[in-house]
Amino acid sequence: MPSLVDRILAALPQTQCTRCGFQDCRAYAEAIASAAAPVNQCPPGGQEGIDRLARIARQAALPLNPEFGLEAPRSVAVIDESWCIGCTLCIKACPTDAIVGANKLMHTVMQAYCTGCALCLPPCPVDCIEMVPVSGAATGWSAWSPQQAQQARLRYEFHKRRHKLNAPEELPDANKKQVAAQAALARARARRQPVAHKAEPPP
Image (cartoon, rainbow, N blue to C red; front, side, top):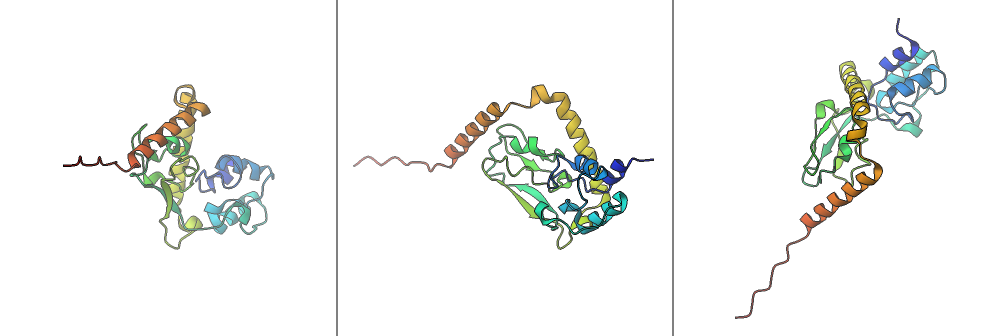
């Protein structure tokens, strides 16, 4: 029989957005199971998600705590590829590996795998990513299916395993990241500088 943590985890939307205040959905599930956190800290799950968690954890079904965000339509990340400088910082931040690209080349988002976590926004040095609503007026579990949640969970687990195995080779330290970002910014600024036209010599 699944443990209480596993049953709570299965009722979470698996967006891995950290808006609940924990590092991922499993950490939040563990906190709920141990009564270290209430069930009303997951905006992506909305009120329906809170009700599900309350039944499983046998806690009161409280309203969503606005300190952790509001229930809203589901969004996906979209990269303005004309502004992208290829720094790869968003790729490393994405918990489901939904962003593809290469160093110094533009990146793009595979929307089918994007959970709308928005974790790619803060590291982008040129603010070329925006969140675009895709579910109309639907929110919470009305905008997110169990199949999407399961897909996101599997991709996140693979992401964690891959980065754990490749951490020494693939994850540069903070100084290297900063240098790479600064170099990319310099290249972007250079591309955007207007071309100075030489004055025509007098006849």
